[in-house]
Length: 375
Image 1 (cartoon, helix red, strand yellow):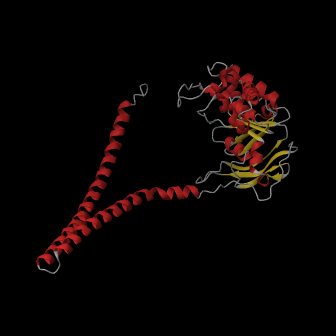
Image 2 (cartoon, one colour; image 1 turned 45 degrees about the horizontal axis):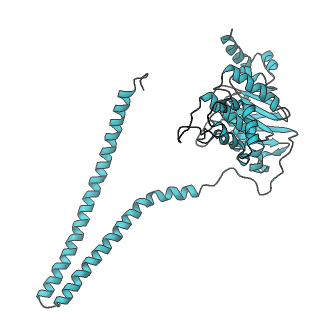
Image 3 (tube, helix red, strand yellow; image 1 turned 60 degrees about the vertical axis):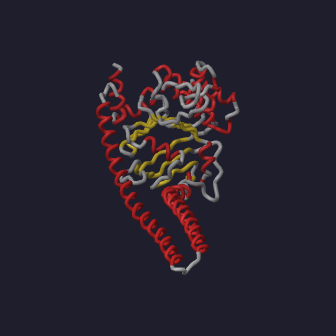
């Protein structure tokens, strides 16, 4: 606010929006008051007209004084009852505006689900994942996030994804975790379509940390345990996961240790730095004994030393397991067995670090650009 000098702009913007809201609200209030006055006048005229009518009939001797008293009391009760009914009807009408939203919410059906007859998940994975001409685009988007993508993620292989922003890297790993299904082509696991496997069993065998990980306003221990929430009471497992991700060094500084409340939403809560939160989030990936581990920009907020230590441990802890790493740092990428370069949702290059440097293509160009910064 101070650095960009936004106070005057935001105040003017608030005044403009507030005045527009006031004008629309006033128009509605005037319209409602006008119709309300008219209907109230009609009701009042009818009510007192009825009184005049029965009084005239009593004066003319057509009804007795007792009938007059009875009718007057009845009119009062009927009027009160009708007003109550109309007020309730008005209240129901206002609340009904939101009912359709509620019904629409309850009517939502998952687009991704398990088949009626599921195939047992391989343990261990023997052949790996195969992308066959995979294409995908998001709802209401004309642009393909991925198109004609074919490659193999072999069992036990460490694969790095490289590409500019918007190249489709995160979309690719979301397809691997079956958060989406391909619009074109298919993804095979050990020779069978990924859609043939039980959805929950598939996801239990995948540990994934996205770059936009959630900062849960819970204790430090539970923040790690959400990686496998059924093991939230398994303290040794939580502590082991924290050690693997270096989150133990963060938790050691907290007054409450693993029971320390994180976030400012609750009393005595402590806020962590971006790098500290990232170490806690990384611990979630180690909570489950997954056969495939996906890290999407896992060290973006870490300093150089912490990044090096994280990936040294990651390499040892994922031996015999498949892993996918998305990173813009080539010091991280070169540790992978193979590197897949994406451009505009298509596969541009794939190979080891040295193979791609020899090709002198896009990877070599990007690597050279980043390397010059440190020369």
